[in-house]
Length: 389
Image (cartoon, rainbow, N blue to C red):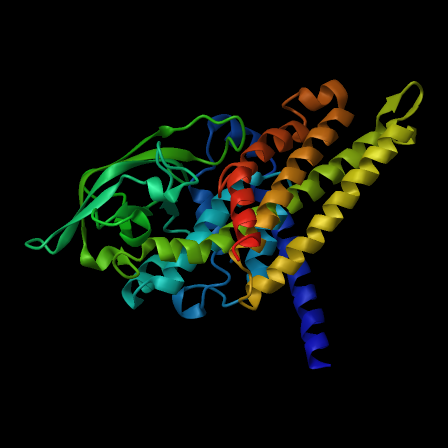
């Protein structure tokens, strides 16, 4: 009985949290989002406002500035932004909050957690995570960035280049994946480092222009003889790849959650539109083709919502494996692309106009099948798991 009562309380709290996100969005986002899309960035002070509302690092223990809430709370926040059509915000938040903060919590020293997590929770510090390189995307073993230890300085000299880094323009620090042992495969000689953007030798390129997620700042980063002390090592030396693999299911689940929420949001818009739009003297919703398309998309969305909930439960009890997370990421993001495309089709010519949110939902959806591991890589992971015996 107590378990049921707890579930009811959590459901009520989550609905209040979602309402808070919707209220916040009406006040702080909706009027300005189109301008942010044109500018290619959200304003820096939005991070402070998110922190003031308690929307940052909800999972992180209170001693480090968070709320100590379950995963479902932080996911509810990014879900709501995605459902409202503000995918750039949900992407920025996911990188900062659900992904990077967990790396620090799980592998950081007390000093690292106290400094970085507290700043991230308030919005004073914005985090980024630099894995991808011009020649190494889904294949993390192809990275060329190096960190060479100097015995005299008791520090590492970092050299290399990263690209497609979310939060790249706003971030105050970035966690960098680098090779620390050149004599072994990257899977056994890679480490993670904190690099503060004030570090000498660090620079970031211009904000990259993308076909979607325009308000999500995305940058190249350059490291030219950047010195980082031993205290900037995250986790154990040469165990970076192992750490990355342990956290990838969470990243892929987050992408899946955002995908389903975005599907739900664009479907709601489309259902309203087809009831209002008249063609040949009657609402578009009265045509059999419209009803069949919506019925199919609603079914797909609901099925994926159930799968994501199953994966969420697995993540919360520590049983979500890489293959299952990859299945979720593959299926949810492919479905998101289909739903956005077919919804746009029902809008007709208006769906191709940027002033209609369905157009943004369509372009924002495309990258979901790429970052966090492409659909093709997801299939490789799933296939290998099936035939591993």
